[in-house]
Image (cartoon, rainbow, N blue to C red; front, side):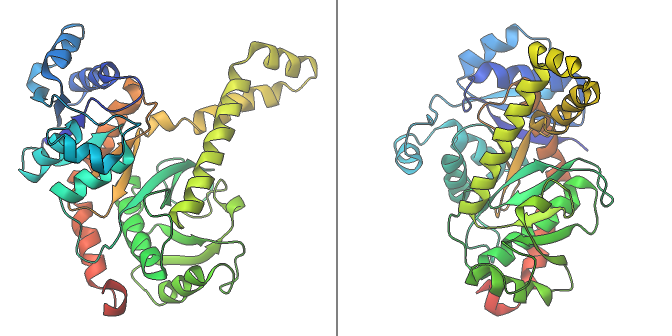
Amino acid sequence: MTTTVALDCMGGDHGPQEAVRGAAALSLKRQDIRLILVGDAPILSDLLDDCAYNPAQLSIEHAGEWVEQHEKPREALKAKPNASILVACRSVAEGRAQSIVTAGSTGAAILAADFCLGRIPGVHRAALAAVTPTELSHGPREDPFALLLDVGATLHATAEDLVTFAVMGSAYASAISGNDNPRLALLSNGTEPEKGPAEVVEAHKLLVGMESLNFVGNVEGLDIPRGTVDVVVTSGFLGNVVLKMVEGIGEVISDLASDAYARKFLWRLGLTMLSSGLKEIESVMDWESYGGAPILGFRHPVLKAHGRSRSRALGNACKVAAKAARSDMVRVVEDSLAALPETIGS
């Protein structure tokens, strides 16, 4: 079965050329994924002329406007009714595509999806997820990442929001990571049930009684890279702080691993194992291999790629978006939320 992904080519720090290159490369490798390239048609056509691609797997949908990173998302979308992210969302709403990928403004993506796709019943706030690198020594996981949500869509979450995030994150991890029973935890300052702010304590009480989820309790920040759980739930403020710290550590390790002087210094100290280990850690922290993370809560999959994404990351994000659509992940979330007590979904 062919799955169609709408790729917003105008967002991202590197412009449409990286999106076009990633799409062109993917079209030569995957016959089961069709791509709609959304953006300024003349620009996209010129960029495609410089690429090898399979024309049967690609089409262009014109959008002569787009949201810049410095713009206020709501005002920009109101002033630009044919912005590329809106056109991409409409292609899904109209049934011409099944999922969306963008490296553009997160706020614009959330608002556009809300306008065009609508939220799943019972979801009061969308959740922006992120993948974080972990050890592979725990559990039946196919990839070295754990899912962390929310990381910025909802700065202050209620206990009910955290439970909804838990349901959505668990369904997504199950669909994408090949783990039928992902381990789920709340991020707190201690593993005891009574630790953390009031909303975390209350969410803990609610999650303990939910047999449909594999809730293992609270985890601390040090547990995330150890891979002790598959899904970590938190408020957007704290999640964003954790994510930025992980990204910063990853960049430092990448710099060390690629720096010839640093490797030579380690070699002189006899720390050759550490030198090679840096390369291994760098590969584990390679977020481009995953490509993107979901904005959960909408009636169709929306994948947010990093703003700095190059062609490889955007191509991989399209693979994840297609997999999310084929897995029927949204229906699983709908069914799970429908089974929640009325006091949570109301």
